[in-house]
Image (cartoon, protein in one colour):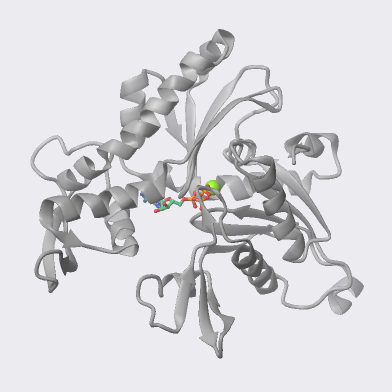
Length: 348
Ligand SMILES: Nc1ncnc2c1ncn2[C@@H]1O[C@H](COP(=O)(O)OP(=O)(O)OP(=O)(O)O)[C@@H](O)[C@H]1O
Ligand SMILES: [Mg+2]
């Protein structure tokens, strides 16, 4: 109560800093923020001033005027623009902790397994600059597995495939650690890009990233419909030849064809994982199956296609978009215990 009134000590936070979305978990409270990783700037007399962050900034993507710039500071799962990332983290923290406190929060934040030491340090420093008194890093697939409710302390290996916006993380965990991992820069963003290229190539229609993402979420599928062309939706864009606006009907069959290449790469990488890992682990995973997390796991039939191609049971986690932040939150809640410490990585 005393602490609440004076705001002496800020509650600790866990952050899933993703290419597409940033989520924040507050100790003792749960998930308190879930916003797109986007920042909009305006140019005021030669100076860049933050105009909007998160959901509000995302609505401005692709529609800005000369005075405004909309930036996604992360690319392929890692920070591409440090200053903007730092500003975004600061603004998000301010949203969840509006009152100033004497003692700033400790922060648990996730890093992709494929991040280089420099990229890891950048993530750590951006959280520090964003207002953390101490930063702890957790490997993203570890967080995803814990958040999906897998028993990672078991000696039996389990496999997690986290398909986000920028990266697909394929990892095998056993005895509370990552024993095999591969990070593939092929995920949701590449699917959107594939839809854009497909419509340009086959229909001469130019569309933006947001429209492509909407098509993917509404009628996207990893395999063509059994009969006919399946669901459809009207899409407006610009004719590539005449330059004037036009509307066409996009079908599920078209989207399946557009997505075949990025989906194929993800499926192939999961298949390759079995060739590269120790045989005992492969046998464990054969018994226990694969768990899909991340927003990409919501693409219809992705689990079915993966299961058919590699003949291993594939399940989609509950609330796949929340697994990583929930796992970061569990690590945060247990930070002072041995179990919590084992979730934190010392690789920086
Ligand atoms: N229903 C859906 N069908 C297909 N894709 C979806 C669906 N819902 C969300 N997505 C996609 O999931 C991606 C976002 O997932 P997520 O929030 O897990 O990524 P991220 O954590 O921000 O990225 P990363 O982990 O790569 O840094 C986006 O590309 C989004 O378009
Ligand atoms: Mg992610």
